[in-house]
Amino acid sequence: MHSITIISATNRPDSNTEKVAAYYQSVLKGLGVAANILSLKNLPESVLHSDLYGKRSPEFQEIIEKYVEHQEKFIFITPEYNGSFAGILKVFLDAIPPRLWTDNKACLVGVSTGRAGNLRGMEHLTNILNYLKVNVYHNKLPISRVDTLMDGSGSFMDADTKLVIELQVAGFLKF
Image 1 (cartoon, rainbow, N blue to C red):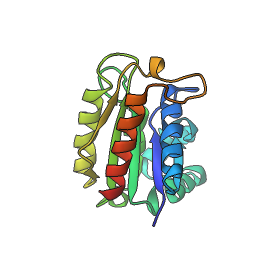
Image 2: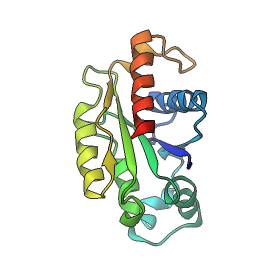
Image 3: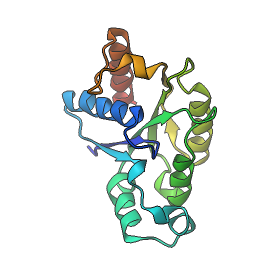
Image 4: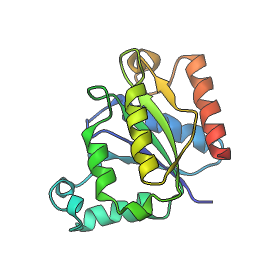
């Protein structure tokens, strides 16, 4: 079985998104499933001006090979940016050859410090992933007020949130 790639879909340093991604990785590890985290803050600066248009930098090619090319399942942790998701995620998706996404599976998690848990952003992302022929798992999890649900080390303190994450992950593994 291939490992799962968890995409921390922001390039913001020290983000709650990255903490949520690490939490998902720990849940998967507890189930005996390998998962790598790709934080979009680690994309090379060339991604916007050359990699996006097919002129591959060695750094971006390495990211494609490690996190996308041989994967079948992805978990997107997407923070809310202006009623959608971060632009860096769209740049990343556009810079990857579409054939590498075809017939893969995705699980979506929306993260916000507000009340909606990035519901709109997850819907936007669903449409884009469907266009790329990615099968999106139906259980999309909005995590609202994430800053109040986690402690300083990035662990969820709220039992209900932990439970819905565990249920989402278990369902996605069967998907």
